Amino acid sequence: MKKLEVFGAAKLKGQIRISGSKNASLPILAATLLSNKKISLTNLPKVKDIETMITLLKSLGSSIDENKKILTVNNNKQIKTFAAYNLVKTMRAGILVLGPLLAKFGKAKVSLPGGCAIGTRPVDIHLQALSKLGVKYKIIQGYVYADAPKGLVGASINFPKISVGATENLIIASCLAKGKTILSNCAIEPEIKDLVNFLIKLGCDIKWLTKRRIEINGVNYLSEIKYHVMPDRIEAGTYLIAAALTEGNLKIIGIDPKIISTEINILKKMGAKIVKKKNEILIQGSKKIKSINVKTSPYPGFPTDLQAQIMVLLCKANKKSYIREEIFENRFMHVAELNRMGAKISINGNKASINGNIKFEAAELMATDLRASVSLILAALASNGRSIINRIYHLDRGYENIEKKLKKVGAKIRRVN
Ligand code: EPZ
Image 1 (cartoon, protein in one colour):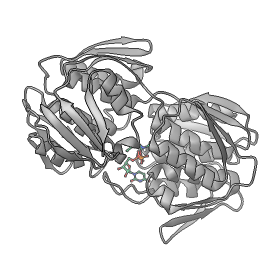
Image 2 (cartoon, rainbow, N blue to C red; image 1 turned 60 degrees about the vertical axis):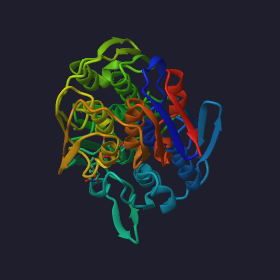
Image 3 (tube, rainbow, N blue to C red; image 1 turned 120 degrees about the vertical axis):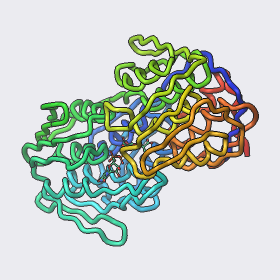
C-alpha cells in the first residue's frame, strides 16, 4: 500500500513506546564489518533503511541471521569489498561501510551516495580524512576506489566542518589503524556516543578527550558481543510535537529525556506542559501555542531532522515565526505541500517565515523525503477532514509502525492503495 489516509482533527491521548534508533543502528551495523566474531544486536527498528543496510552487508558477504528480535552477524568468511550503487543510492548511509572495509581489508569500492531531496550529500570530508590515515582513493564513474596497501596508520585529524557521517566513518576506520588517531571537531550526536559504546564493548580502545575531540588507539583483537541499540530521539521528538500540535496528552516511553532536552525546552516555551521521568516523558499540549524562532544546528542544538515537524507546530502558533535551516541546503521540500493545506510559509534562502494562526485544510499530498512525510501526517492530524499522503515509502525508511502507534493513541489513520 502506497498511500496513507488520515482523518483530522485528532486529539492524541495515551502512550507510545519509542523504537530503536535508525541513525544509531546504521553505523553500528556498518561497524560489524570490523569483526569476524559473532555480534548480536537487539532493538534495531524494523524500517526500510535497516533492511537496506542488512542487504548491503549480505552483498559484502556478512552472514546475518534475523530471528525474532535478535540480529546476529558473523563475518567469519571472506568479505567482498564492493558496495553497489543500487543499494547505496537509496540509503546514503551506505557510505559508512567504506571506513570498516578499509580498516579490515585495506581496500574498498563503494558507490558514491548521490544526492537526495534534501541536498547533494557530498562525502569529501569522509575522503579527505581517510586519506590522512593513509588511504589512496580515486573516483571513477560514481564509485570510490580506495585502498591502503600498507594498512591504515593513526593520525591527528581536524574535521573542517561538523559531519555526523564523517565522524562515524573515521571513528570506525581508526579502530584497526596502527597507532593513535585523534579526531577533532567531531559531531557528538547521541547516536555517535552509542556507536562508540558499541565499539568499546567490541574491544576497541576509544576515549573522549574533550567535548568534540576523541582518541582511538588501534587494536587487533575484537570480542564476541551482544549490544542493545539506543532509542530513536527523532521519533520521540516527532511524537512530542504531535501531542503539542493536537492539544494531546501523551506518555512517550523508552527514551531518556536528557538526550532531547533542547527540543523539550522549545516545546515548553511554546506552551506544552512536560514532565520528565527517568525513561519516559509526559506531555500535555496547550490550546494556546506560543511562537518561537528556531535554528537547526549540530547536536546539542535543535536537530535538522525535526525541522519539518516543528514547522507544522509553528503554523498553529499565535504569531509569525522563523526557521533557519543551517545543515542542509534544500530541506524545505515540505513547505509547498504545507502551503497547499492552507499554511502561509515563505522561503528566502535557508530561512522560512511562518505565519501563525493557520487552520490546516485536509488535502491530497505528496511526500518528498523521510522527515517531510511525517510533517504531512502531523498537518493532516491537525486539519479537518480526509487527507491522503502519497509516496509513503519515504516514511517507511525511518518510522517503525507509525500508523499503528498513532492509531493506538486515537488517530484515524490507515494505509490505502
Ligand atoms: C546524518 O546524515 C543523519 N543520517 C541525517 O539524518 C541527519 O540529518 C544529519 O546527520 C545531520 O544531523 C544518518 O545518521 C544516517 P552530515 P549525514 O555529514 O551524516 C555536509 C534522517 O532523516 N557534508 O552531518 O549525511 C552535508 O551535505 C537523516 O534520518 C559535506 O559537505 O550528515 C550537510 O550539509 C537525514 N561533506 C552537512 O555537512 C561531507 O563529506 C551535515 O552533514 C559530509 C557532509
